[in-house]
Length: 82
Image (cartoon, rainbow, N blue to C red; front, side, top):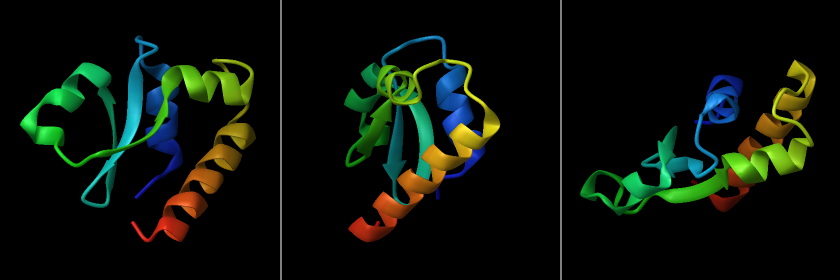
Protein backbone atom coordinates (compact mmCIF):
# COMPACT_ATOMS: atom_id res chain seq x y z
CA UNK A 1 0.00 0.00 0.00
CA UNK A 2 1.43 3.41 0.89
CA UNK A 3 4.73 3.63 2.73
CA UNK A 4 7.28 6.32 3.50
CA UNK A 5 9.52 5.19 0.64
CA UNK A 6 6.90 5.98 -2.01
CA UNK A 7 6.09 9.36 -0.41
CA UNK A 8 9.82 10.15 -0.37
CA UNK A 9 10.03 9.01 -4.01
CA UNK A 10 7.34 11.56 -4.84
CA UNK A 11 9.28 14.28 -3.03
CA UNK A 12 12.44 13.32 -4.90
CA UNK A 13 10.72 13.41 -8.31
CA UNK A 14 12.12 16.06 -10.63
CA UNK A 15 8.77 17.07 -12.15
CA UNK A 16 6.12 18.92 -10.16
CA UNK A 17 3.45 17.07 -12.14
CA UNK A 18 4.64 13.71 -10.81
CA UNK A 19 1.83 12.09 -8.85
CA UNK A 20 1.28 9.40 -6.29
CA UNK A 21 -1.32 7.03 -7.66
CA UNK A 22 -3.02 3.92 -6.41
CA UNK A 23 -3.68 1.17 -8.91
CA UNK A 24 -5.00 -2.23 -7.88
CA UNK A 25 -3.85 -1.67 -4.31
CA UNK A 26 -0.33 -0.60 -5.26
CA UNK A 27 0.96 2.92 -4.69
CA UNK A 28 3.42 4.26 -7.24
CA UNK A 29 4.85 7.52 -8.48
CA UNK A 30 4.19 8.37 -12.12
CA UNK A 31 4.32 11.38 -14.39
CA UNK A 32 0.81 12.70 -15.04
CA UNK A 33 1.24 12.20 -18.78
CA UNK A 34 1.66 8.46 -18.12
CA UNK A 35 -1.82 8.41 -16.64
CA UNK A 36 -3.21 8.66 -20.17
CA UNK A 37 -1.75 5.26 -21.04
CA UNK A 38 -3.63 1.98 -20.82
CA UNK A 39 -1.19 0.81 -18.14
CA UNK A 40 -2.67 3.30 -15.67
CA UNK A 41 -6.33 3.09 -16.70
CA UNK A 42 -8.36 3.19 -13.49
CA UNK A 43 -5.58 4.58 -11.31
CA UNK A 44 -6.64 6.93 -8.52
CA UNK A 45 -4.47 10.04 -8.23
CA UNK A 46 -3.83 10.68 -4.55
CA UNK A 47 -1.45 13.62 -4.56
CA UNK A 48 0.88 15.52 -6.89
CA UNK A 49 4.43 16.44 -5.96
CA UNK A 50 3.49 20.12 -5.96
CA UNK A 51 0.58 19.41 -3.58
CA UNK A 52 2.85 17.38 -1.29
CA UNK A 53 5.49 20.13 -1.15
CA UNK A 54 2.74 22.67 -0.43
CA UNK A 55 1.32 20.46 2.31
CA UNK A 56 4.73 19.99 3.93
CA UNK A 57 5.87 23.58 3.35
CA UNK A 58 9.23 22.38 1.97
CA UNK A 59 10.71 19.93 -0.52
CA UNK A 60 13.17 18.77 2.18
CA UNK A 61 11.02 17.88 5.18
CA UNK A 62 12.09 16.10 8.33
CA UNK A 63 11.56 12.34 8.28
CA UNK A 64 8.87 12.61 10.95
CA UNK A 65 6.87 14.94 8.69
CA UNK A 66 7.11 12.40 5.85
CA UNK A 67 5.94 9.74 8.30
CA UNK A 68 2.99 11.90 9.38
CA UNK A 69 1.85 12.51 5.80
CA UNK A 70 2.31 8.83 4.98
CA UNK A 71 0.14 7.82 7.92
CA UNK A 72 -2.52 10.33 6.89
CA UNK A 73 -2.56 9.06 3.31
CA UNK A 74 -2.69 5.44 4.48
CA UNK A 75 -5.60 6.26 6.81
CA UNK A 76 -7.51 8.16 4.11
CA UNK A 77 -7.09 5.37 1.55
CA UNK A 78 -8.07 2.80 4.16
CA UNK A 79 -11.30 4.66 4.87
CA UNK A 80 -12.09 4.63 1.15
CA UNK A 81 -11.79 0.86 1.18
CA UNK A 82 -9.02 0.74 -1.42
